[in-house]
Image 1: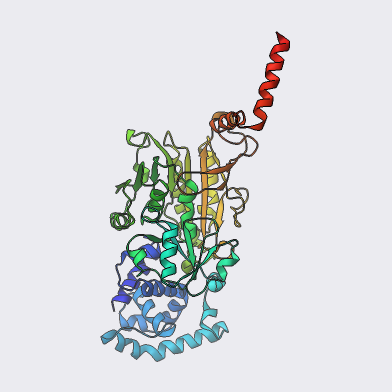
Image 2: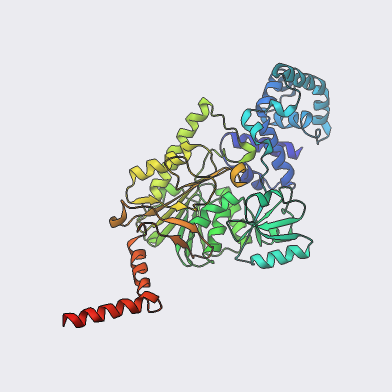
Length: 482
């Protein structure tokens, strides 16, 4: 009974956009997280079908149930493994079973299909073959990648080295695993692997986090000891990732308006061993950029509330009229947040990310922001990444199950331009190892002035083969002139 009440409550909140499914599921404190998550996702997938069946019978009127509770019960009766409760609810569902099964049969005839999955909306049908691997981020605040690999090998897991291509991930099965192709602290397992009850997870040595969700902190890459803002921080996985990259040194300001989410986040960060954070139950839009408290903030991660349309279990790419209106509202909020982030006087880099597939929340927001806030430019991220932002913002990254083996995601990195360089080309980031170090390809003098000066100085270093010849020419020239 508790399972259905929890699932119905989460479905209600999801439809009201009060949180992401995973966050709401974990906040529920339900004992069997995996079972609850599966029920919510599957019921949501069949939502329109269930509504049709319920409306074509007198089930809702006779049962006097709320619609979301009716949906989860009918889903388990018709599409799941049977109703998992006893008592009055079990008796009620058995009483209506024949009528509900007949309604399902009629609906299939009407749609001219024979399989249940053929009743799904097109967006959900396309995702049936999408299987997201299990990604495990090693929490380097508490352990190392090598130690985790050794621990797992002693438990009977088979380590297959570092992936060299995305297709390597598709071959994973059983207890075999790989190190990720792009992120060196990320391990990849088959989709069926579950670590929720594993010692490493409970001890905070590993974080269960989708690869796409790891990209924002990875690409922002704040140096050790820097001052950083995580603007919309809960549930906290990105915050703990930032802390790991910063090696728990410096200051990490994390804001979230929801008190309950912030409380959950506090527990997560404690388990992860994060100590450099300063949590605030505050609306980021009301944070004063001119406050002396944030005078040294140079890095901001902004992952605002979004439609969540990139989450595989919620995906439906068909955009309805009411959805279009909601996206406009979300995009307006996201744009305000991004513009606000760029107002911090010392900020050098801002990562903007969403788990949305819609351009309204992604490229359109970034384009509008760049027009409204001059002085910033886009950084070209990971040139070999297989999925790029929509034209003309190819500098940004997109992610999806087919091309990147992740949930749907979008990431843009905005960097402050020095006045002399505003009209020049963009900086290209090829790799960003964790720990505040970065490797950059400078294209056509595109780096900030201080980076160019460093490059010029480096070219005259005594160990440079051309330096001695240059000095010899200069001495000869001075001699002739004298």
